[in-house]
Amino acid sequence: RIRGWAASMGQGLTSCSAGATAQRGESLSSRLPYHASARSSQMLCEAWSSSGWVVCAAVGRSIFLYSAKTGKKLEALEGHASPVTCLVSSESSLFSGSVDKTVMRWDLQTSRCVATMRGHTGPIWCLAVREDRLFSAADDTTVIVWDADCGKKLDTLSSHTSAVRCMVEADGMLLTGSEGGVLLCSRSAAMTRIFEVRAHAAAVTCLLVAADDSSVFTGSADALIKRWDPTRGGCLATFRGHTEWVTCLVVADGALFSGSRDRTIRRWHPSSARLLATFEHGTVSFRQRSSFLSAQEDGTVSVSRVSENEKFTRVDHGDGTVSLRTARRCFLSVGPTGRVSACSQTIGRDERLELQENSDGTVSIRSHHGSFVGCSDEGFACAGRGEGAGREVPSAEERFAHCLIEQHW
Image 1 (tube, one colour):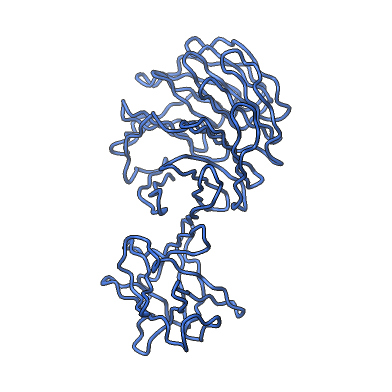
Image 2 (cartoon, helix red, strand yellow; image 1 turned 180 degrees about the horizontal axis):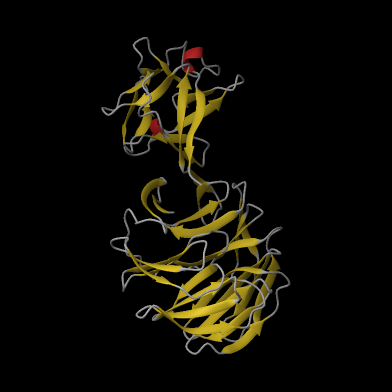
């Protein structure tokens, strides 16, 4: 399943799936502000803005063409004997790599395979194309250079000693990352080495080259992201925050975004490596005995036994605070007078909250004014009923069980 997010707050926007009709699809520009590669997902996509097609491959031997406008499945490309692992396109052709050790070139007008390239002795994990050259990287530790038009083998790069898991071609550089944690940078034309570094303690799982300054970013199974000097290979910054494999990297709105097997998306300052926000795709609830904290349609917030509108999406910020978004895409707010509401569609100081874990296993919601969210005698949520704001110990009415309602994998 593919989902779209608002870059500033992590708000879910769109969703489509290779196994079902897309809910909404948009034509994607091929002129992206980065070049990226990831070898850790099961959904592969390649988009054409001019033709209005989106090409996808999931876990299987088939490649599917969808209309980017309607989400309707247009065609299925069949030919590989084993699962398809990677896709890349040139102006007129689609290339696919597979566990069957072959690369295929497809004519999308006829939906036929017009060339099959054989040369690898292990599964192919990634592809890259530059003008008339096609690069394939495989489990056999090699990168093969092909004539993209006729499929003739031109050269082989054999510098890696473990499987090559990801690859990016940008600005005349070919960057490859291996299962052994090595980052290798070569000149695309001559295949001569620029630099080689032991980038990570575990496999390099994704690569990105930013278009503005050609900075190189690597993500790894060691849960780290690193930024590299593209000319000498020196490490410029290390991004720490994920707890599992980093699976993908992208640049948007002047920020670096990373996805991970820890089921979070994180937004970073690309130069300082400062964590700006954490997005968790799932909903949480706050239970107090047999009642739940609920946001109503009119923006009021109550503690009610009626199990509706009790799910909040949690948005983590880099300073340790969180924001709680309702199904109506409004954020929980706590004002200076203690009024609790859910009317704001933007995040300000009143929408930044602290989730304080208590020794009895409960959690309390604390505002930046120092007050805790609790329940009034009438059943409405309020803050600051206890003796004075700034208390460190919340009362019983200000303690909730923190429940994960649903999580998407």
